[in-house]
Image 1 (cartoon, rainbow, N blue to C red):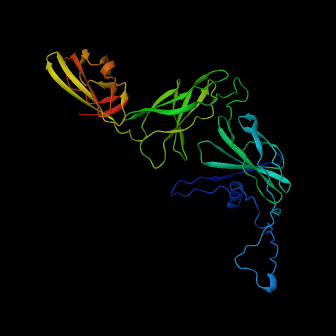
Image 2 (tube, rainbow, N blue to C red):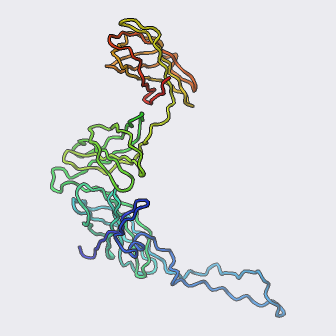
Image 3 (cartoon, rainbow, N blue to C red):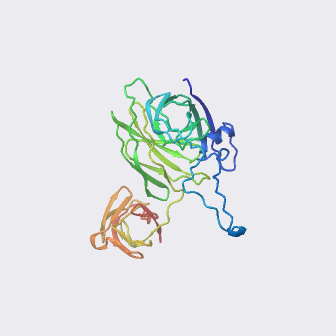
Length: 384
């Protein structure tokens, strides 16, 4: 690859820990710091005209600033413009060919380009250099199924550097020979939905593929060093356990995959809380009467939040073998031990500090122990 060289730049360091610097500070300073628009070492200060002496030989008035001609041209050297239209003309399992529109020289000839690139969700930034060309192929540290981001900067014969180009992100295929070398499109709009006392539900918009999307890989990223695949699911939702508290972050992202293993560019990242949100509801449950084989109970759901709840569903599980036979002031259903209670029209809205009471009649054989956990619209409630 004539005229191209590469080296690693640096590893980001964890807070309070030291990491090895992978390139000399000289290269780091020149590759990652944009050059000033004016080279202070070669700039020529503008000359001001002399102030004519006052009549009669009197000294010129003090405090009067010299006048600068409005048309005085700058004599500072002009750096090159930023390269534009950075694209990948070919992406293979072990290489990425970049093309771009050349930078425009300011005062001096363009002598080459400095390129930086990195794998997403890692901590190593790499660099490469190219001569005064508009295309180059990057092979170092490029492998199958990698998401890589590139940008470049122009430099001239005075060592001045342009602004950075826009960032280009690509994903390499897992095979160059088929039958399928095209990765799926990236999943969109990853969000965190319902959060319970122990879980959070992720959801996203589906991807597309030239053959077909096989599933989605869900990853957890600590925001710094480590990215780990935690699940592969066929649909566009995934329920994860709330992460334990760590000094770093708990970010999640999703990549679509096809049948041969090609993976997409990653979705956006979201952060899942390490603790559940504060409860905005309270449920009280009372056995009103009980006899061998049957019971009657009432439950009241209280909105202790600051916003009204327009439409409510309360869910809970019986710890015994109770079976609901009828109810009032709500619509009740039961699957196994889990009971689902939905509002009726006239008690649909729970105002702040408002409540609704519903009744349950049922049967039991071994135990009529009261339930101990309730949720309102998927959010855990306090009990009592």
